Length: 100
Image 1 (cartoon, rainbow, N blue to C red):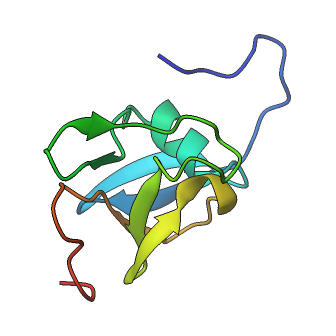
Image 2: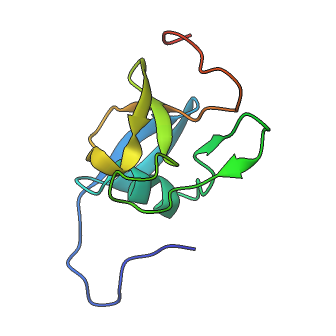
């Protein structure tokens, strides 16, 4: 679905954990873009369990909220992808507390 433009400069790839599975993503890209490129087009579900995805990619819409390294409600579009990140994609309803 998402891929770098032809002729773009190669990037360093790093491993992150997304819902317990390893994903290889471009280091330094925003986490929202990295998730999209890794095939995670749904970043969360709303209170009706309807799928939501990154929309504005600049910190305005809050559609890219994820759990990151034990912290809830992190805007994935405002964080750069780094090796070892642990991401959980919320599934709707009240956000879980902690890193369970």
